[in-house]
Image (tube, rainbow, N blue to C red; front, side, top):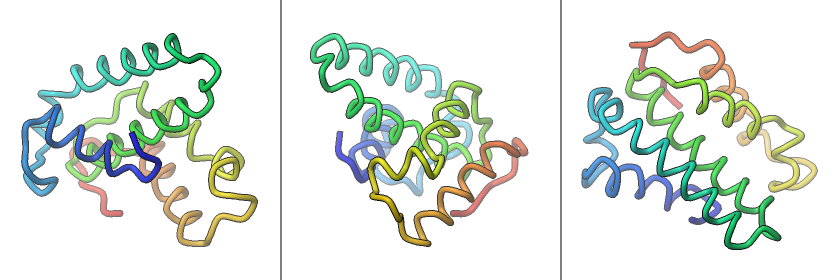
Length: 132
């Protein structure tokens, strides 16, 4: 997977949900595929670590991004964000964590996005569609 999230977007939309475009995603489609997505994310991460344990930190960053993309899709469509996704997103969107990948001073747009994502995940109202 890549570092900008594009591969995760395609993986969730095309491979897991069988759609052509993100605009075709709905709460029902996401909820119908959520368990499979979560199992595959966890299994793939464990496989990567087992295969190359020296790259564990980099793999964690990539998979954390996968959980962030999933959380965005869930929030944008009003679907419930499960605890495992909340945990990964809250852990990987702190400014301290983010500085390891974006440098010591991430831009204001990045900070604002992280704050908005964290707030939405922490205070989610199921059924409400969030905009990012």
